[in-house]
Image (cartoon, one colour):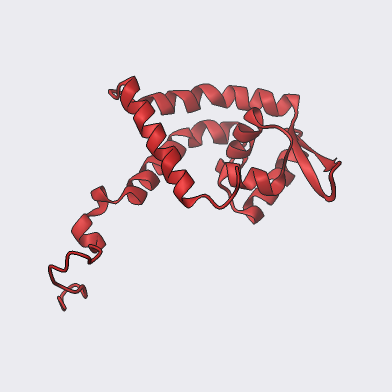
Length: 164
């Protein structure tokens, strides 16, 4: 045991390397979190000007593509915890950016729909989102981008808990 850092030493070929051996720049989850943190930070000024939080912006973005989701489905797509999303959707309803309707197939659930005002708010946000996206992929050719997206889809498939 390396007492200084509390990690076992050895050359066991089946041993999983420690994070210190891999390094932060060799650990994909760390890099993905840094990228998304920077993306969200870049958009914060525009979101704030529109009265949006990250959770609200993600909800509007998802609903702009897949409208009428149940709250639980919206949470999966928006990657927002249920309690945070519930408060965000309540606020979006109050602001007139989304509306709730009873789910005709499940009376215990409601579906969330984007309103015209919600669409307009997202449409004002989209150019900033697209510009941040384009900055992330600057200098990366189309083939590399397709390969990267393909890898992300495979990774999502490996960890997916939902059918969608």
